[in-house]
Image (tube, rainbow, N blue to C red):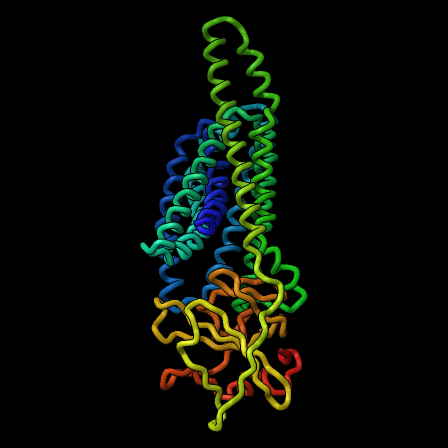
Length: 432
């Protein structure tokens, strides 16, 4: 349950925060006519999340390439929005309101609406696909029901944070709003670019080596640092009142009926702002706890020695492999031990879905892999590998080995080690 809550909370807050920034921006300027484009982008992203997750899970789609292109497209859209926002902020001359309204009322209204739609769509759909893929494994078993409830709590908390962020920022100093939210969005852009490079290197669309993967991998794997930086900035805006709010409270301190109404409205906004700030702190605390207790082991489990039979193949009973559990073995090839891994996939992937690969990859060498929840993590670059991609070449995927099932056994021919091009005589992949 906690894992589902943390995942949906993280993904949901990122999406809610970015959508909240643009909604607060439009409401601040009275441009409610463009909110329809934002809600349409949000609805389209939710629908596309389910469709995209289905394609990634069921069809033979190159997941790394798909996600890499999506990350880079999102980075371009977000960066364009930030530049557009900053230019309009400068045109307003600080506190001169109405200029943006005149700009938006011009001939480019259709383009602006399309841009807001695209911005919302790309930011939400990348989070949505990841979330839906995770939730697709949820069943009505006891553990599945707990994960479902945790996911619902996470989504509800993220939605509440987004609503409170918008309600608590309506009267925030406009220049301060642009500066803080602009920095937060540019941090998003940096994260998107890192993730895009990482996924495209996995798909072998861009070059990669052990050094680049060692630098980029942990930043992608431990994206909690980017997330914390993005959330902390708006939290400062919520928790620390700006000069406009303090001036409004002072002006509303009079005893007239209008003054009392103005003060009551300012107090309601302050309560919403503080509630959003407190909820944001709780969310950061939960994510920090989840991050601390979800780190994989930093050392490999021992490799079980095996030897080929008289037919020149390794025979392993199929019933010894539990679904989703990583198994590590070592076989002697030309006098040197070579590690390989075996993973039986979940029942939904087929009754005999078992993948075999060397405990190494072409980029990171023989650092090896460890179990990380439902995934497998490279010990060199900390990339998380989808178990269903094991057996495919490229990126940080383990180097595939040919195997088959016969007579209730997993059969791994010794010739597959040489055929992989990284078995006999390849120093980087030796060692137990």
